[in-house]
Length: 171
Image 1 (tube, rainbow, N blue to C red):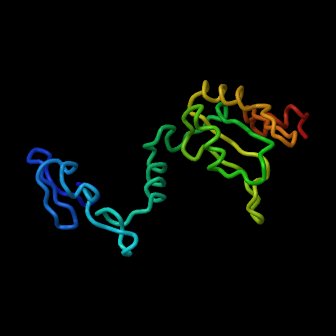
Image 2 (spheres, rainbow, N blue to C red; image 1 turned 90 degrees about the vertical axis):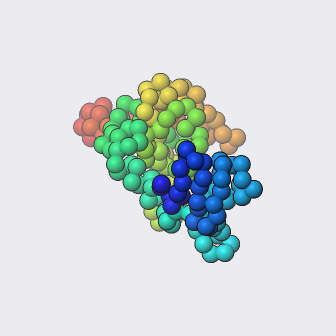
Image 3 (cartoon, rainbow, N blue to C red; image 1 turned 45 degrees about the vertical axis):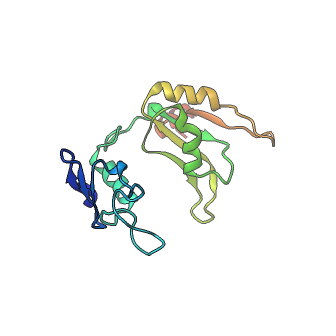
């Protein structure tokens, strides 16, 4: 069993790392709050009964293995939005929270571009959707959104640098 739990579903008995044996479904036991073993961050231990894992390690493994939708070498600039007019306190997480309700975002497909020295947002970012309809809906909904100070967000499809150079006459 993964994460250190042992037991069988046929006999409905489980043993956790806390050395407690329960009969029946784990959720029927008086020990409901600890179905996966004891562990407390207050006591300096790891919560749960598995080996100490970092969620960052798990995410990196899933992304590198290509298991997540979009795959390992996924590129689709046609579904990538370029957002300008972002406030200085914008983070990748806040950008994700704004744009993810419109549809699935590719793994590592959301980024608020930050100044390396100051750590503040440079005012622009990117969101890469898996579905073109989600991209269109987000662009139509958020583009032109005005802030109380009179500034606004501009949301458009990302263009490749080569496309931009061709439009400007190769400059």
